[in-house]
Image 1: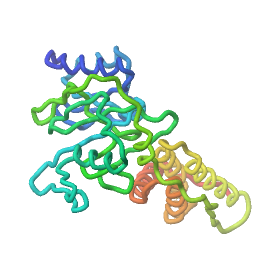
Image 2 (image 1 turned 180 degrees about the horizontal axis):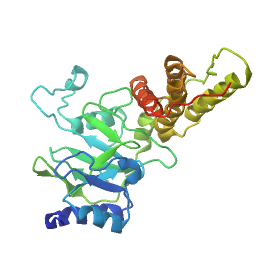
Image 3 (image 1 turned 30 degrees about the horizontal axis):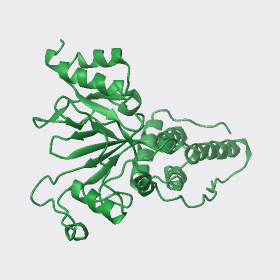
Length: 299
């Protein structure tokens, strides 16, 4: 049954799509995706958008990476104990906007406010920028190794933002500046670039035995390791999962040990810059999926 009260969200979703931003439905009144695989299913197709938002008053999700966007999220403290670390507090920082101002001052740069801007439900700010062409930057979180500062997150490949026209906890996301989306300042792009990866070293696949069976297994493992190390910047995790599924079939068939496969794939994932915790989760998930179809190799 259609939800007529979703017309405002539909209009907002179509407006975002008209800017060539890939949108997808979020749970009504929430920030959670209402669909799986949202990064690849996000769309600018007006017909698909209209069909989706005729079902319910979905919030609007914008898949930042495929939309060519970098969104800087200047957040507000959420509770009384949510206070800045001493390094930021000494500068009088009380929220993400303050932290960005301090960062800009330290680099001798103006605050990049002349761009499309959305006020979030909590009173925070989303600053929209065009991502550097051909450079798939990833999300960053707050005061982390590649983050910009306390309460300053960025959303890029692998990320989403809640678009204008949405609501959360009864409060709206509203456009406060209708300026064109500005290019991301080059000095900020430099801060957001990941550190260069260390030189890749060959991954040794140690398999005992000789003959066609061993040769096949060695080739299979090397092929899946190369799938990971040769994957594109924003496809590392997908490649790792596919490799784990393929080798997981051989683990389930008793041809390879789970410990060995995990070690080979984890080394490959670390070489392309994936975090260890995320990589281990992906490998474990792929091995479980592969185990559903055990595979053996003829001697």
